[in-house]
Amino acid sequence: MAADQEAGRPRIDCTRCRHYWITWDANFPRGCRVLNFKTRMMPSQEVLAASGKECLAFEPKSGGGGSSSSGSADKPLWRA
Image 1 (cartoon, rainbow, N blue to C red):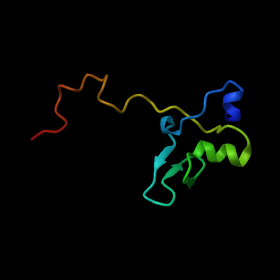
Image 2: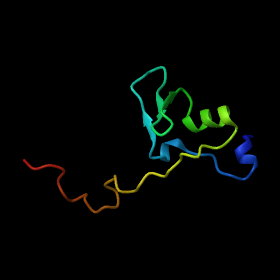
Image 3: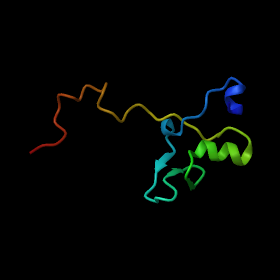
């Protein structure tokens, strides 16, 4: 069991962070824009392994990007 789960804290999910990005580098497919690095592992795991502390740069993504609840499902995405 991971140390962060033993302390009762949920594990940070980088895919839900606004700073997480998928790179074009096959050797280092994941990245963090705030900490400016690419890695094979999830960036939060890399931070935990290097510093022994949870990632302090985590910020949840804003919910304004999808078409699920915005009511735009009936609107066309483009004009002909």
